[in-house]
Image (cartoon, rainbow, N blue to C red; front, side, top):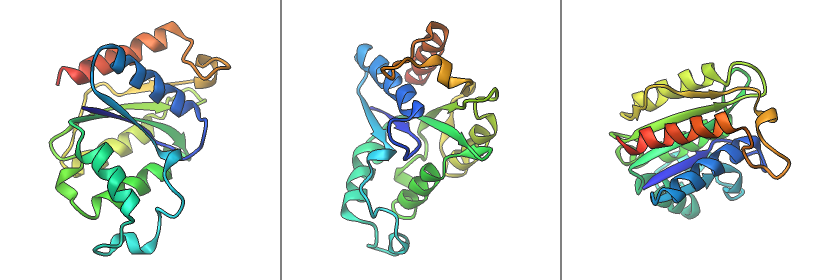
Length: 179
């Protein structure tokens, strides 16, 4: 099962549009897939207690089991925030990695997609995220995909309307499934 993570807590984001496209594509290929939208995480999931044994909320543990521990592979779509990847994604990874560390990303493949309104497609953020995933024992699919000038690639309904971008996203998903 593949978990596609929309790596921002900003609702109705372009990041979520890209993540939805990937999720729908994998589903159309009869691949089991779940979409984890960080903007749907419950209020209060971030707390100082989450780092102590038993301090993680029951709901966050359920999300971790459903979307992370039960996944065989991941596609993480992250926007560029301040020259890096989104803080909400970093906090989520930290929160789930404090407990049951080895069950999260260790030995699992991850494809990375960067999203930016500028020209670089969040390449710096993808480098940072790659280092974090490798540190946790994960495997990062070679050939991260930067999606630049994303505002021009998504229509008014939130669908990826640019055909070359759709093709690139689909090819990345196909490569991940082959791992």
